[in-house]
Every structure is written in structure tokens, then in C-alpha cells.
Amino acid sequence: MSAIRASSTHLVLIPSYNPGEKVDETVRAARAHWSPVWVVVDGSTDGSAARLQAMAKTDPGLRVIVLPRNRGKGAAVLAGLDEAAALGFTHVLTMDSDGQHPAQLIDTFMRASQAAPERMVLGKPVFDKSAPCLRVQGRRVSNFWARVETLGAGIGDSLYGFRVYPVDALRTLMHRQRWMRRFDFDPEAAVRLCWAGITPINIDAPVRYFAQGEGGVSHFNYVRDNALLSWMHGRLLFGFLWRLPLLVVRRMRQRADLP
Image 1 (tube, helix red, strand yellow):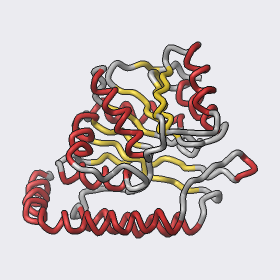
Image 2 (image 1 turned 90 degrees about the vertical axis):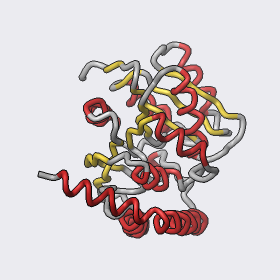
Image 3 (image 1 turned 90 degrees about the horizontal axis):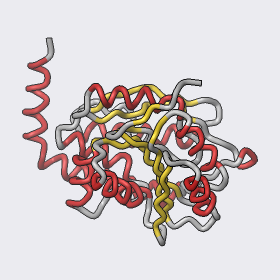
Image 4 (image 1 turned 180 degrees about the horizontal axis):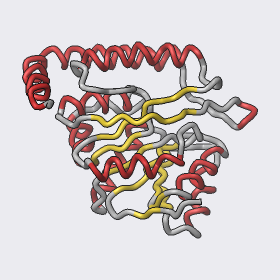
């Protein structure tokens, strides 16, 4: 097993809502590769907060932040970002609490971020047979619109939440508006950061969907969450149109800088 890397600038941030016992495995896997690891418990009612707090009592590399009520993934991430900024951290790697994301790649993503701290590092999912067909096909629609809304700025995947974000840039965006608080967080964060000039680095990463018998927990609702994504892309398309001249100029300059 490789040594655990510690950092005073980069931390792992895990938003968590009723994940069941999978979060225990997720946290242990993350801690096996990185320190510090923070979990933001977003109003969970499944007993996971107590278990995680017990783990943190004997692990100085683990911190648990408990929100009193469920506010959504983006809101949980923002709570972590605000605390991270207050303590001087500059970057966070977000990963889901349900075990879908590859903890073994934390170090790879963090090294990419440390080498280019002005950029965001986005996971590009590599699916196996466990991936639901509707989920795989549906994300292609979101990815298409993300490419349109950024003039092809290089977002490899708009929905995969295994990423490294610059703290200040993301906090600034989120505090300026009231969106990006729930399931719409991941794609909107990527698009808006591209608009702000934060260019992506894409790294392939496997994703695993666990069946219920394996402890898998999903809060995805096809109707509700696809409606939320549709409304989000409508907003972003409107924002894209009035930013279009600036984005065109930026893309022309980027192409001119290419060797």
C-alpha cells in the first residue's frame, strides 16, 4: 500500500446524504490515500453521522461537519468550501459518499491540480457493466449542452463528481447566485468555472454502480432530477448567449496561443 499523502492546501471533501454503510468504506478508502478528508453530512437520518463522528475521534486526518437539515449536494459542498477557505485550503477534491468513485486515483488527481493550481481537474468516467443504460445515455445530453454552453472549452464529462476545484473561484461563483445547490451542482459548476476562465484537465476514472444487495444507495430520481437538469441548461444557455462575444474572443486567443 502506498503511503498516505498529507497536504495543507488540498483536501478531500465528501458530501453525504443517507448513504448507508457505504460511506464508512468510502471514508476509509479515501483516508488510505490522503489527509485530510472531510465529510459534510447533509442532514442524514440513517445514523451515518454518529458512525463518522466516532471514526473521527480516533483519526486526526478525518473531520466531520454535520448540517442540521438536508440542503442538497451543492449546499453541502459550499459549507465545506467556506470552512476550507477559512482554514487556508486552496483546493478540494470532491467525491461521492456511496463508493462509486475511485479513491485510488485521489493522489493522481491531486498531483495534477498541484502542478496546475489555476485549473480544475475533472474526472471522465469509464463505465463498466454495472452502469445503468439510461444514466449513461442521459449524461450524453448534458455533456452536449455543456460543450455548447462553453464553446467546446474541454469539459470531458459534465456530471461526474470526482473532481478537484480551486476553492476561491468556486466559492465566489456560488455566493454570487442561488443556483448550484442540489443535483445541478456538478454540471453548472463546470460550465460556470469555464466561463470564469478556469480551464479543465480531464483524467479518465472508473465509476462503479452498486446494486442494492451490495449496499448501493441512489437518490437519483429520473423525473425530478432530469427536470432540474433541463431547467439548469436553459439558464446556462441564456447566460451563454449574452457571454458569447467574450467566449468567442477567448477561444480565438487560446487557439492563437497553440503551437
